[in-house]
Length: 290
Image (cartoon, rainbow, N blue to C red):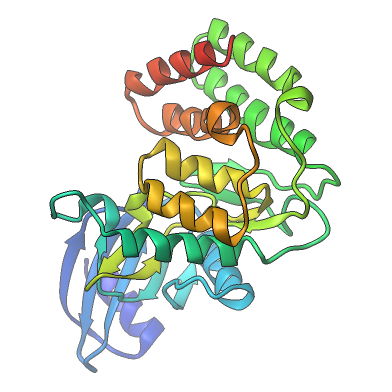
């Protein structure tokens, strides 16, 4: 802690007067820090290169209107952000969870984010999904990108780490081989949050105050929507509003949401020592016919 205090003082020119551990942060330890100049900041420390998270937040701040914390300082093992008031959506302690108004606001945010586009799929550098390396080679078509850089990439990591059995990996590869017939190419590559679930959305006084922990790249908007659906973060008010803003193609809820859910399920099997994700991946593949 003495080393952390010194690094914060050197980085920001102000000394910590109190430090409080916060929940959250899959790739590091998150703390609220009150400084002697009256500012409050959030620090993240850890072994995963936090400079990549800083670059992702900076890209979102520059290229979109998505509310994200400002980066005050970053290196590979220390990230300092502005403190944003709010409670994660998945921890909101009210009957029925967040309001329909918050769900619609979230849909507005993602619809606007998905309006930010480039001419190819991928990103200018490899990013991270939590602690998982996320390769982003520029690719002309979406389906080959998703097949190689998301589905097969994570399946290989999961097999190499002993996180899923070979039989499950073979079923994922069968799905990957059929993607040309089961997925659609979007009209344009969209800037994605990449980790759109309730733990990464802060709400305060009935409004969304920040989106956290991105895993950005340019891809199909349906991947963000599938993440929302898979985690049950938002419901019908969200999807109705998004449909009005950008549209949702037929077949998404019936088929493609499960296909796209296989990617975060693989990530979760790698990151967390919890067999429930392996079992859920097994059930998801079975629903898809594999």
